[in-house]
Image (cartoon, rainbow, N blue to C red; front, side, top):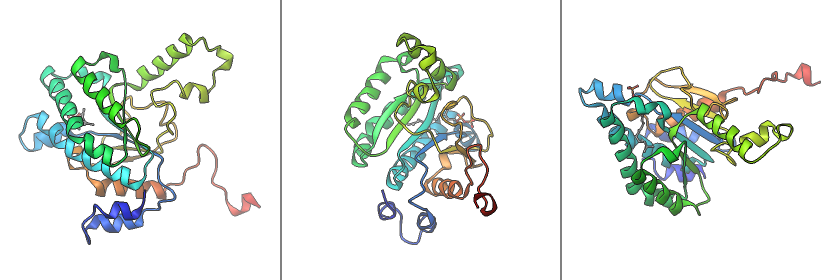
Length: 261
Ligand code: FPP
């Protein structure tokens, strides 16, 4: 979108305004992926149950989804629940699923207003019927939108996704000689979307945690100590500005005047 559309939501004179004005709209990341981390620690710091951290994290989700759409990001992927997260106490898993359903129900209008196409990636067939129904309703209601694609990674694992893609290749009878990186990427959950240019992780952990393993091959990684429930537009803009200062070489070398002569 544009600076004007972004500024519509920023109070005049707020620190975010200066950050927004620094963004180069010609060099935005096409896809931003976020590992939302630190909800439990945020709750613990306040002597609250872990679930309260997840609840507070919903406000960050709202802010980041709207800001990304207004910025003009092509795709945004949020890591909401991994294939490993089933190991958490059943009360936490149930609360997370309930929060997700509630988020979708309450935010569908705003998602549509912002012309966002909502999609779920992961082994969705293993989710319960009520969650699946809400997800399907969200995907159907936004399928015609032409703006940002908003992926929620749910029951998602990067290795599981690669195995699923390999199974699809076999099921489709693709001969091994016909398979290349380009074709394989079209068998992933994110088929048709650009790979993330920017991977953000909150709460200071330096891990990729089985997230979009294939797609982040050349992503720039930006880690902040900010816990997810405290993450807001300001932090997203800081990440985009840091990304725009990176020197991306994709395994090549930086051209110098001497070499290009
Ligand atoms: C990581 O924090 C966070 C999660 C596993 C879940 C994130 C989910 C939400 C913010 C709510 C629903 C999402 C959407 C997209 C509507 P953690 O619990 O691992 O934190 P810790 O490392 O501090 O314990």
